[in-house]
Amino acid sequence: MLYGEKDKDFIPYGHLNQKFLPNNTFQYISGVKHQIPTKNHKEVNQQIKEFI
Figure (cartoon, rainbow, N blue to C red):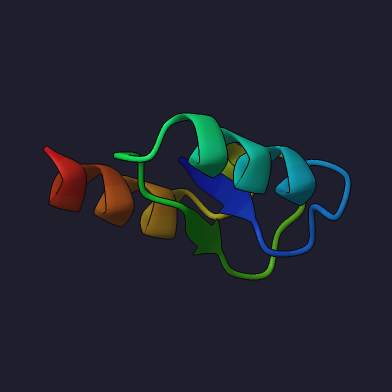
């Protein structure tokens, strides 16, 4: 799961997801809030490439 490091409203939900989905990974995308694919596409694309 990808979350913007500045997205304080959604990060708690990410931690909750980790509790119920123990095999997921939790990654922060630096320097952004909620619109991570448009605000930091390079890091998002890199995370996706590493995942697949």
